[in-house]
Image: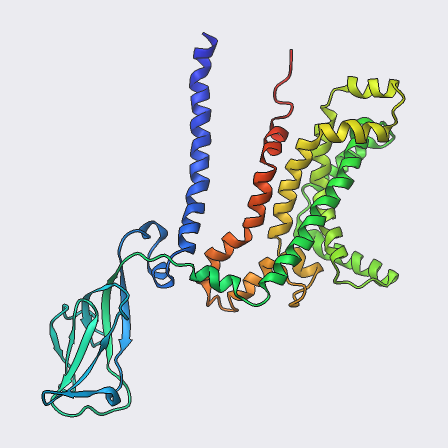
Length: 381
């Protein structure tokens, strides 16, 4: 009877989780599809139309009069407005006001008496009874049905850009120590706050909780001034990896200490008391008992900290710099867009390139993440 009462609630929970998964998966799938689409199609239609034919308005300029050839007493300029891309012309025109005035195969009379014919496959001819003159070719407006096309051109443009490899190494150099250092420091502090009684412990816990709500933007400049002052006193350069490691450690410690302290405080007290009876010191208990038992919580925080430091741009620009030798991957990809966002089509490919390493880290530590999140939710009788 109890199981039957709980089954609707369990079903609701499962459906809610499934809905959340779908809501997160759809944008990611759209991002992946968009990164593989042709640049021109990406500009005119959404990713959900990737498998269908899209309609595009093209403006093509025919070759100049110097390319005309004489056939049967007529002067002819020919070519293909679609460059043999497999698209089909649905309408064409030669005036801006009427870009789709004629159907494929019809003949349009131009202002100078020439005759323009555009076929469905994109081939066209401009025929004149007299030799054509001028320095520029005739403009042709075309409405074309373009079949779906997938390409790796966006990825090639990003990966072949100058400095991508160095920026990738810079991001790893920033992220790995910025993840390990806060975990090491926070683990010691969390153990002390959880199991070592000393005066002012409650006040320190309250300070840690209060630091969780301090905005990064508010503390960034004061922290930079403090670091520059200490660096000038010790003769250490301002823009170094040590500076950004310390910055990320400072921003990550409150959350790390808070999470690890709560986790360690929930561990069985009997284990620590038995170890102390056997003569173990606090350091021995921490290294041999607490750390192995707290590995799921450590891995959970490591995932979040690595994702934060890997995707960070603001702290990296402030503490490391924006030079070619110091620029991290996120900063390099921003530069590829140009000052006016001219290469916006590479955004989707750039997004997937930046999440490769975080995905590897996430799936490597996923089982520990789940254990860390579920730890303490079920207690024995």
